[in-house]
Length: 313
Image 1 (tube, rainbow, N blue to C red):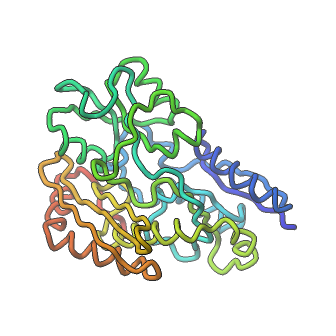
Image 2: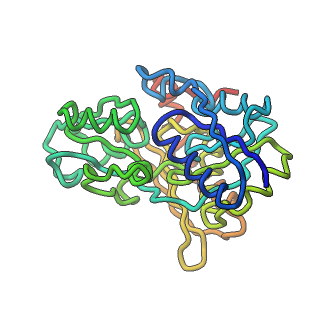
């Protein structure tokens, strides 16, 4: 069996994910080592992610280690991976998806609707902010950075009335005590790829790809390929106010997607069924429709106001 070196960020959640994949590989007889790599996104903690403007802020340094053969594979939260990978890399596997929805975490309130007028809600995601403001224009949205423990501690210390986090990360870490509501996707459309892990390798590394083949989940790959195609068509990265959620319904792939102004004043939504065998086609078609219905104006305004940085060439 092979000796495989796994590149991972050093956060608690990233290491959980890397160790999860390592355990599955070891069960197949492989020898596995985990290499911790600090990324740009980990080093910049005092600026909202949407304002950083670095393409692949959570992946660039890991890809450099891959290219230099310092590691053989990298484990990413798929939502952190740019829709267009740099030349020389490929996604070898998309794992079975954990819950893709967002979680409402609070000490005193059971759901978003229960928050008092002017409540302080923490999130650094323009996507979450936009949908929160569309639902509750009275809420005060404040930046929230740091690892999961840091964010939960800030909530427990009363800095926020509520915070919004990905349900998948909280469930993986077993930190579910402050989850009061799993927010329905029709209220808060998830980020493209949320809840799935993407396993990245050097392009053309057929030996490593073969070792990882068993990790690939066909349903998750189809759904996330559809979502990422939509994101790519809209020209957005992971820090823009775009939501996309694809799932199987009655034997077909169904995609819900939104583009929203961060202040919640404009929100364009589109839903459509498509062929499971052509997920990118569905994502592109829905993306085109959203642009034609005003999504292009929303995104241009977002970039123009400096609320998010356009994807870098």
